[in-house]
Image 1 (tube, rainbow, N blue to C red):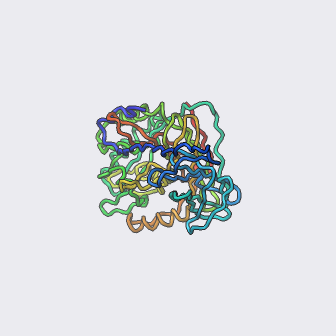
Image 2: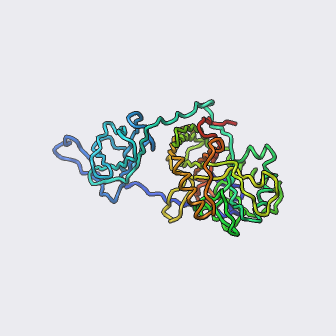
Image 3: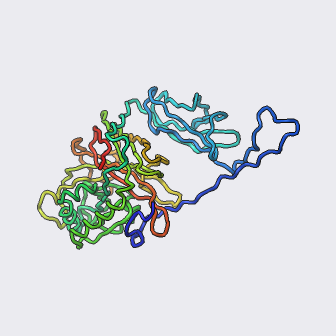
Length: 412
């Protein structure tokens, strides 16, 4: 995929550079004059030559029900024997045919040993409630998915300039054609003029998106603008450009979520439109949060805050030393193939921690959530290439979906 964004050479991008590491062929042993031995093998490479890796096809399982298939590789070779599995306390885990079944709920840390090689750890979480099934695919042979742009408004109720941006977005998205092209979220990550904000969320997401002030709007975790004096048509033009740039490559997203008490399980399945490396993330949003907006009008839409980010489950730590929010890796997916990621949330914990942070940093304790006001944003990100050949992650596609319900793939 080349030149993924029309204006890539003009915009500030979050660039992630990757290097390729070749596989070193082990030196082959000499010919045996007495004939072949019982099992001829090449000389083992040293630990510095190759890396032992362990992956699971599932990050979340139901105890005593679901089976996780474990794959262990040494360099490019998939190992099928001679591997010993351990837990975090160095206890051996019996895993016939590389299949793992959790006997009890909790986090199961697993790592592999093969000769002198040791892998990193992986964690498979086990729960006692069923995991939702992936919604049925209405067009199994198709990879032409409906495309949307993720727009995040960085704002706060104490900001007297923010109503200008909120009004601009309101006018822009009154047009149904453009409302259908975007998923809008609101990140109340600041506190201005000492005014309490009941929608406040403590996060490093604003730093990740290089937000230097309010209001600012970000597209696809790639490009931000804060000029609320631009016209409605100019914003629509930006939406058109970002939308068109990824129509041919946008992955499909199918979601099924269930709520059992305070436990929410969200199963997201990604279907690739082209071969690539993919990540998936999810935000929990809440509508109907009332707070008078500084500098705003008396209209309900100005003081009732919808699409407010309450919880973000897409953060990971990069080697560059900065939090990243492009989502959890689901690895390489071939065109037309799928991969799953399951989110496991405790709503009581989310609200308890969020409410405390809201009181400490946002000046007001969160009200208890209303289940009917909650909804989900699930997105998939992948690598793009700018005009200079640099690789970077961006949000490839996004959907807004209900809690405790199914959202199948949407095709064009």
